[in-house]
Image 1 (cartoon, rainbow, N blue to C red):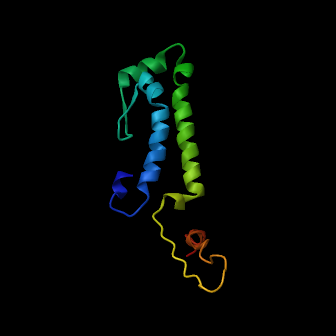
Image 2: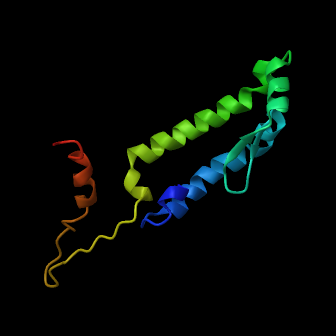
Length: 119
């Protein structure tokens, strides 16, 4: 996300939601050798991770890693289902002041996504 810092995007929402997933598993990941920073990046303590992998109850000790990856995958699926929740968008509707019509521009941000790979 840092590489897109200069673009107009709703990075705050995406960062906040991904950091929420990282914070949820912070203690469990640190215990097995995967350290999290305040910015959300991960670093590996190879000694502690090797000890976790080689322990007798490795499947139990590494289960937080599977839960973490599943949560990240689910968040990625949620983002891919409705990516415009995380995009900078401004919709302007020019309504006729004398008549009450439904907003004709309500679905227009999504129409461009339908033909993204058309050509």
